[in-house]
Length: 498
Image (cartoon, rainbow, N blue to C red):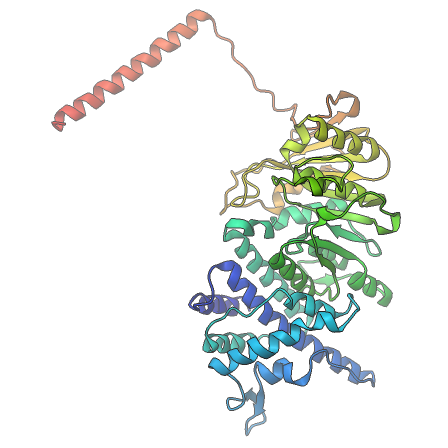
C-alpha cells in the first residue's frame, strides 16, 4: 500500500495543477476517502444482508466509486476488470469530476441537518476541497492505483491510517505554515498516556490541526496494543459513544480542518465532532459544566498576537495566543478533568501582569501535578522554540509540582527526531514521582512571582576559581599559541608569493 502511495505522489508531482507536498496530500486524500467510503458502504450492505435488512447507500448510483471512478465488467473467466469502454478519462473525466461530482458532494452539508451523520461530514469535508489535478489522464492513473487498494477489513484500514499519518507528516515537513499540521507522534502518545482517557469520557482539542491528539486518544481507548492491532472489547453502546460523542475539537484553517476530519474517519471514527471555527472567538465566561470536557490534549498555536476584539472573550486580557488558549482550556475542563498541553517556555517564566494572573489562577484553581521539560529541537524544522508540557487536573489547588527534563542521547534534528523510547524513564517515574538525575519536585511555597519554569537543581555547574596570577599565565599561554599560528600562516603565504 505504501509503495502505491509513493507511485501516486510521483505521478502527481508531474501534474501542472499540483505544487508541493501540501497539495498532493490534499488531492490523494479526497480520492482515498471516496474509495474508503465505497468499501465502507459495501461492508455495511453485506452486514445488513446477513441480518435480513436493507442498506440505504449514502451516495446516489451515479456518484458511487464503482460507477464513475473504476466501473467493472466480467471477462470470459468471470473475473472483474476495468470497463475500458465506460470508464472516463482525459477531459471527460475532468468535466465530470469538477462539474458534477464535487458540486454533488459539497451539497451534502445543506441537505441534512444532522451534524453527526456521515453525510453531513462528507459535505463539511468537500465544502473546502476542489480537484486540482489538471490532467484527466493523470487523474485516471491515480484512480486505477487507488482502486486496487482494499479497505474492507480492519488490518487494511489500520495500514491505511498509518500511511495517511506519514502523508501528513511529509506535508508538515514541506515547511512554511504547514508546520501546524504535525506534532511528533511520540510526544502525542506520551501526553495521551499521562492524561489516560477512558471509554465514556469526552476528549477535546481546541486547535485540532490534523487531529493527531484525538486519534492518539482514540487509539489509547480502543486498543489494548495498537502495535498488535488488538482491540478492547466494547459494548454496542460504548462503541456508539466512542464514535459519536467522545471526540470534539475546533480548527480555523480550511485545509487543516479537512485533513483532520478525514483523518478521524480513516482511523475509524465516523462521526467526530470537529467544527471549522476559531476557538478564540468564543467568550469563555458563562460556560456550563455540561459543556466542559473530561480530557483535553493539545498543542495550540503560540507566538501569535490577537486583537482587542478577541481579547474581550477572556477574563485576563492578553495579545499572546498561548495565554488565551491556556485560559480557554482551564475554563473548558470538567470537575476532576485532566489536561496535557504543550506550551512555550515563556509561559512558565514570564512574570508580567497577564502571565502572572493566568498562572496564579492555574495554580490556585487546578492541580498542576507535572511539568515535562522538552529538549530543544523537538519541533524542528517548524520551530526551534523551547517548549514544555504541563499536566493539570481540576481536582483542587497545586501543592507541589513534579518536574522531568527529557535529555535524549543525541541532539535532535529534522532527520533525528524525538523517539518514544526517549520518554521511557519519564513514563516510568512520573506517577510515583520518583526522583532521578532528570527529575525533581518543587513545593508551591518555594515558587516566587509565579515563575514555574523548569530549572533542574541536579545540573549544578562547577565553577573553577583561579588566582589572578594563574589567569595571567593562561592569557600569556593563549597569546603565545596565537603568535605561533600567525607565524605558520605567514610562512605559507610567503611561500605562495601572495
